[in-house]
Image (cartoon, rainbow, N blue to C red; front, side, top):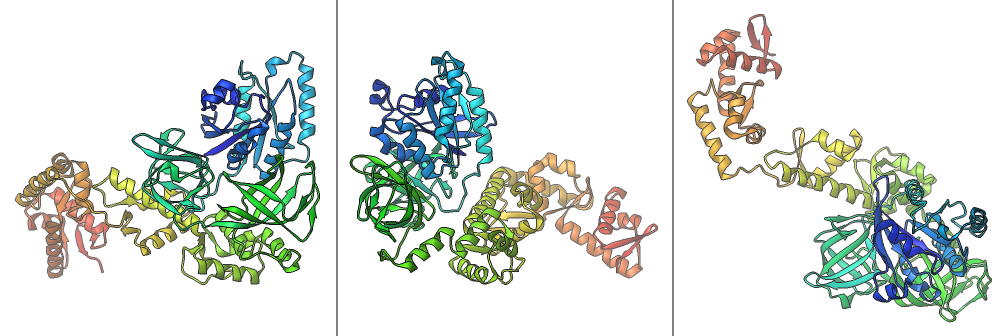
Length: 631
């Protein structure tokens, strides 16, 4: 599931476009609808032609509300840069484009709107050329341009198909097993309580889980989940998610805070960052400047500490240590934006390199600068973990090859990841760079483990009278290779997450239990077996008496033994017959089907079915009309 966001100058038709595409007016505030101008974030959703459902964040275009725009654009997978055909590139177009570039939004699409207001087709070509010129040197330099009219819906099919192709080429959000939801809206619904919304990243949220609000540390529980107004049991990374939280009031949560699993994230008041100052800013950035930091949906004042230089000139890149007035939640690699508080101006942005610096750095310390340069590339452990996350279940040697680590660095990285529990071995063996044993990143392993358990739980719910799910069926559902599947099953069994029973797998604790009505039918069937133990009811007669599901359950429990498609015996009767046949062959050296028939006063059909079954399982062997014990 993906989220796209709008960007562009005020009154260029962003909200009108979204309303025409989705049928949802993203301007939810009365003031917005009266002024016909977006003030705060708006939300909608639609289904693309290929069936993918996407969320949409509509942002304000007016310069007075640029900071509201920043709260919504950070979590998007793709941008729709909207430019009116009758006006072209305007000041906020350029500022929004600069922000998209600083945030490194993965993909984008240029939407030339209001083409119905332009009579001369040549003007549209001229305008598109001007747009292309403005995009040069940005992340959207090669973005496709689509011309549309929100009134006539001209160009909409091309817009949707192009957007679908762009998203297919863009990698999906990773599930790292550590969800975080930067909050962009908080409200209360009578009868339900507190609801927060945001774009979920890095992991899944499940109904009933305990969650923590950061940086306050207040805890609640997930009472309900919705994506695009549909109730969900699980919210997945990349989805626009509404979380109904019990135990917390709407006054205890605000925009900019983060919802996460307890203990997985920690807030910080200091960040080490790589920063790029935009080339067209009004003046250089100096040490000790006061700025506004925008990270995720959060906004706070920060004091700039320039590292390695006294001043950063427009267009230059440098190192900053930011000291924050309010704590935020950050992860290495998170993108951020800095703005000048007054007069308001977007200065630039970049990526978080160290979200938890241990101390205030000396400003002109070469070792500090060298360490930061190394961290940009990532430590060997970081690089290896990223490789394992991308590969899924893979051998250690394949992961090392993907990470392109030297042997010495690889050994240290393996040791570090194993010690911290971030790397999970699926097979026994030494964690060495050349090892062939399978491993997984801890986050990916958690997701796979939960998927296996959830699949088994659902199977037991649908088929309560079955001992478990067939191994091959589970392997097919998980789409794993035989080696990976066997390793996963063995590990889960060792963790007491599942139980193996022959060719079937079950959740620990699952037992076949019959209802009183089913027990009554079993009692009636058992009576018939007692009356004629060696000429019992056929398989069809048994199924007619108790039902196919109950009959199969009795077979799986071992109470009944099917020796052919038609013949079935009670286990106790079958064991007695086998013992008697064994004894007779030992005494006489051999036995015929007729002997078995007479031995148990049964018919040839039952005797023949029993002996052919004993042949098939290796108890007896046929020699003409005789059977002997298999040696």
